[in-house]
View 1 (cartoon, rainbow, N blue to C red):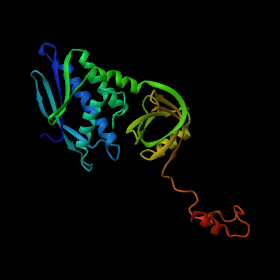
View 2: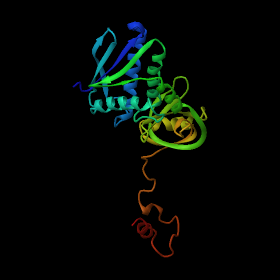
View 3: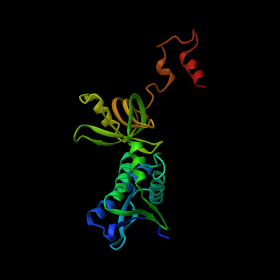
View 4: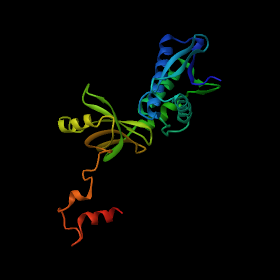
Length: 264
């Protein structure tokens, strides 16, 4: 039994696999693993490096990698491999988003499947004694999941990560319920105060509000943000005594005692 190992196997037309196809398949698998890793880890960061275990050119060509846990990270290897295998299996038959599959992970699964119509006769992702044969049906199902639906004003909660100031100010909210990243930018790109708040809340749990672009299943895919607040901010009023004298809340009753009674 090969624990913590996953690979890809290509069969070419007339038993020929070209280098360009083989390298693309390996790169797409690598990016798929990294995305699912970050989506399923407890801190939303990659936990695993992938070292080459086996490389062979025959019929079929085969690339096998083994997960190595990064320093100071939890062991997420089995979870990653299982999520990738079951995700590919699900995408062959349904247009439901698999657990741990971000938009980028879905795109990589679609790219792998497209190779089946572009010079690759058969392509498999395998681990242990199980394998999943990719199919052209994955292309259609991923396209449905990623297809834009409509624009609505709303809010999303998640973990603020992946700040990028190149080619405009962009960031991402990791949404923990569906295990995916939602791409974000400012609705008003010149709002320096809002940009400053985004920087200050980096790697915090936040609530963002703005214009959301959803897919046809109603899942938010992209947000043009108009406001952001931290979900772990402390209360402004730490004690009932801080509001003494502000309001006559209950006749002759001491305000501190009254507020305390409400809390109890």
